Length: 476
Image (cartoon, rainbow, N blue to C red):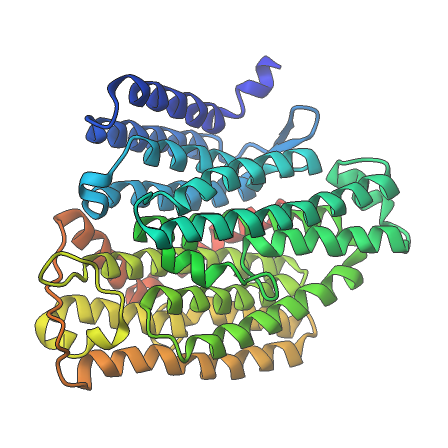
């Protein structure tokens, strides 16, 4: 037990840091929000250092239920980085409504996501997923006086409970027909042709996980929750949980269901096609920037699933690279949205109000254009590279029609990204005066993200390739 505890320092740090921050908040109330924010940021920084210190370790702990390896470490670094930024930028958005619970909920959500990324057993899978989900439900409804936020939290909770039920049913089927909850044991049971019971288990487990990544047809919560939740929370939902859920899905389908590739691959292909198509078409008529980003998120999940559908190490490497670039792009995009405010200080979410933004806020407009072009995957911006990698992995795995469909849909999806750029640069100035403006921290993150997503990002390809190859090799 002591040896196991020595290998889960990131989880221990998050647990202790979250509890300490919670206790401080219980005694000091909401008067010291800066103190809670600082405690949470230091906790995440310490957990990140612990993850880096454990790189090179490849071990199972607690009777094989959790894995300490490079794959989990790669995912945790992205999760902790996204969580760090979402805590850092929150106070300016919430102003007087900032409360001690916000950083605590982010910490416990990050703890759950770290467990998800390291799970090698169906029980720890569910514990990590529910720990993240329970914190997320509260975060979605964090603005108690805002009807949209309350509605978002309620919708997320009801649909999340439904997805958890489907996941649990699938887990019970896998356990009933394999006799174990361990991923390796399930894979052994699937070594021969899996029976109808195991196939149904595969379907329900993937359906439950598809809800967490908002893949079609389990996407219905995404636009309403993204629009209704506070913008820092939406930033969090669009980044860290996506990484955790995709990491968990990769572990499940590769480690637990690897021998039954023919069974799960068809499901992933359907999810990929449906998500790319609906995400591209659904975003075209959107007038709210957060709803549009929700459909953009669904669309990008489809592209990520194209890499996973390959079922190869090259496909997993492509997915990991895609997740990294997607997280940077999403955080930068949302930080720009956070800075767009009218003369009264209210956040501007209406896309028509962006008209003429290039003349009023040229820096923000340029950064937003970079993020939009990157999300569209238009070369030479760096957002093109991960899409190229997932298409290449699909082609090498013999999934040429899937890759062709993805390329066609990416062209369709580029329409609504370019439409926003056209609004900013070529439309007459809107009646709403978008004042914009943010602090130095937000400006630095936006500028750094935009620069990295320009051609500068290509300089980091060898480093990214080595890191993703090291992480992906763990699953094979």
